[in-house]
Image 1 (cartoon, helix red, strand yellow):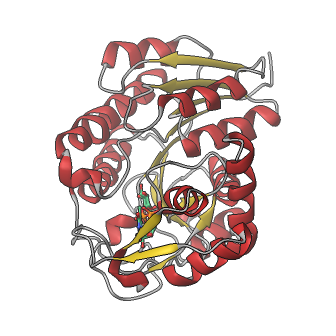
Image 2 (tube, helix red, strand yellow):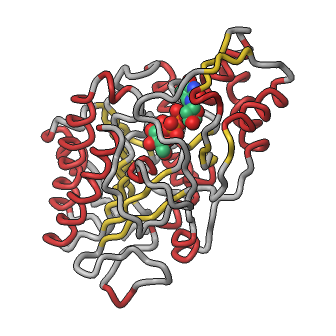
Length: 338
Ligand SMILES: Cc1cn([C@H]2C[C@H](O)[C@@H](COP(=O)(O)OP(=O)(O)O[C@H]3O[C@H](CO)[C@@H](O)[C@H](O)[C@H]3O)O2)c(=O)[nH]c1=O
């Protein structure tokens, strides 16, 4: 019998899914990717990520929508039974959910249920799915811990992700399917998303155009470097939730299901203005700053308590913003030849 491990990853043409797939492929895993290549942002960037994964023999991609249950099931049954299913595909982005809320219901609720159902049907050993730090919504107690209430989401985006935490808990209870939910904190780095702040700021500064800075720069984010993030996910793949007697210190493990939720964040509260200053230093160019008011749906601050991740995996993210920004800018200049 082959000892090669098999992962089914959704969103492999996306920012985080691409990085995770590359990490597992480099470790010798077989990876089945599933991605809808939606045009929420530049499809060429998504195709370029997939092209890099295609250099590995162990990678196979299925291009279809999450909402298409027949395709999800066929893809999941196409290879050996996955040791882990890691669901990272989503309609992402906080602000676009004000414009097009239905896209979030379709992709994040219906699509996530399809992944849950297919995971149960094939009997994977571990289902891992992305929620978001945005579920902490209007909470003000910092840092955000997994034991806090998350009953005040500020956008439909956050609400759909919170809903998937509830749906997956019930699913894990009913089916005994071990499930880990992640709450990510503003992930950034090479191959990043064009709708996110670092990409928009870098592009604007290099083109000599003004950059829009929300809430006059008076916001805080726990910026998490993508390489650190996928190392955290990698550790959690092997931290399969079991019964209540397997809980570690500070665990969010459910008393009635093999289910837990884990923050993956840098545990560092960075002021947006300081982040932009660091970007200017790396680029050697000043930004033209267009200060704006707070945007509807935005949270003023995020800051992760990452102790549970450390207790489960022995690892915690550690890249500071100057190294992280440098990693992004070097990639951006190389990829766009500027
Ligand atoms: C796009 C944009 C953002 N900002 C500000 C808002 C935030 O304080 C900060 C970072 O914004 P973003 O890079 O869009 O990230 P954020 O709002 O935290 O949301 C991200 O992080 C969330 C939490 O992990 C994810 O669920 C979202 O999918 C992801 O987009 O920069 C600006 O000032 N101007 C901008 O144009």
